[in-house]
Image (cartoon, rainbow over all chains, first blue to last red):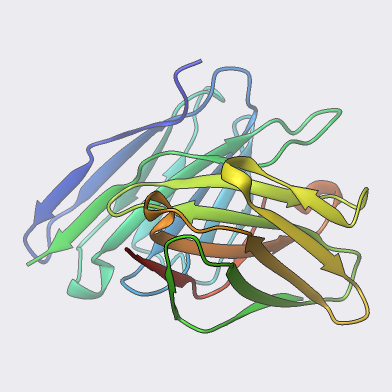
Length: 115
Length: 115
């Protein structure tokens, strides 16, 4: 078990560019969550998947954001036409969601800086 | 709806002193409560969790927390602070069932430990 893996760890992009982040959850975990954390704040829920199904999206997830988990394994979070306000740490977490539901285990995050 | 309030964005203690980090929650359903720790530029690590079993919960690194329904509190304590405890701490709440794992976080408390 190597834990939740996120790539890249850091991303600097120019305003208006598209960016994509990847999350590889713990292998037996069928639930996957995305959170966003801005400086000095706690993480805020964005969306979550059970297997390949996206079950809930926060109002924070504007039309420029899209998340996928095509085969129920890894997930990608894409931000189109980035804005400076998108600068944040994007955290991925996973948990077991069948039978006994476990707590969420977090990856180390992807820090996005939009310049 | 659920929410978490962490009283005190910064707490400073001397090495060997008692650590007390305060967390109050609001939940319309029986809550599940967590404390996470975050080191700079890292993801979140679970310290402990309350899942409706024992009200006094022991976690890693000597931390513990007590669930008090009458006070809607879940304060985190450690009898003797260590320099390595310096980090940011987040209290989080979730509901049970299908929402378990979708966390609502507090604003965080930065703990500083002085020699």
